[in-house]
Image (cartoon, rainbow, N blue to C red):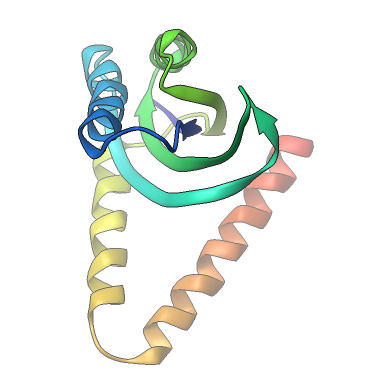
Length: 141
């Protein structure tokens, strides 16, 4: 399976119920295509770099998941059709990964961040930046 990351911007004027429905719809789309949702991050309301559909702010959501090419294509299609979504973009992070391994790593990272001690969180940040640098090098190469 391939590892993808999709970031999308949700209309900030939605009620909490509509916002949660939009998130649930994206997760359901991934699971219907036999994909695996690894991590969902809600970054909250942020100011947009430029107005989109006459909105100055948007609620950012990042979804990491595993699936094949059809999974990402279907998710993008559904997000473009949904009026609650202002913008969406998908990036392929890795060509072939084991979803169970990614889930295990994510669980370990959450346990480290929940445990006391500042050293563990600093190490996690360093490894994340190293991973981002290696991913950038692979995609540009």
